[in-house]
Image 1 (cartoon, rainbow, N blue to C red):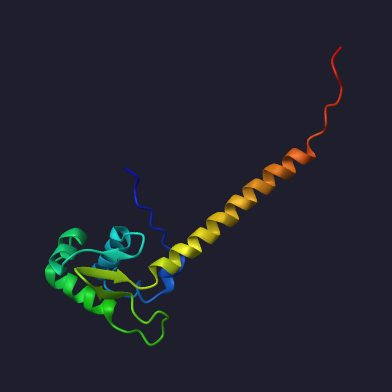
Image 2 (spheres, rainbow, N blue to C red):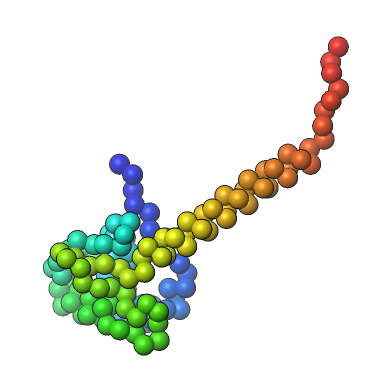
Length: 128
């Protein structure tokens, strides 16, 4: 079985997520790690509390805070209600940014290897 990989950008440290209560950050992190490739998480509020290892009250508070509109941010909310669960707003866009960065890193490695190969001296001397 292949594990789901969810990148988290360092700019979260200067976002409103980091200013939230620790239990809210834990719930947010749980949503990030539990999301499918489309950003969907199938869970009830009680399931979120159990999965994130927080109280039901903390889960309710976190979900309320994460679904509130933020006038200073784009997107304006972090989570939105979906059938039988939740959807992380902007999850696919973040995944696309990661794909672009991954390709750039792949191109850098390829070009570094190519340039190293070009700088090697040619050995055209044939043994008799």
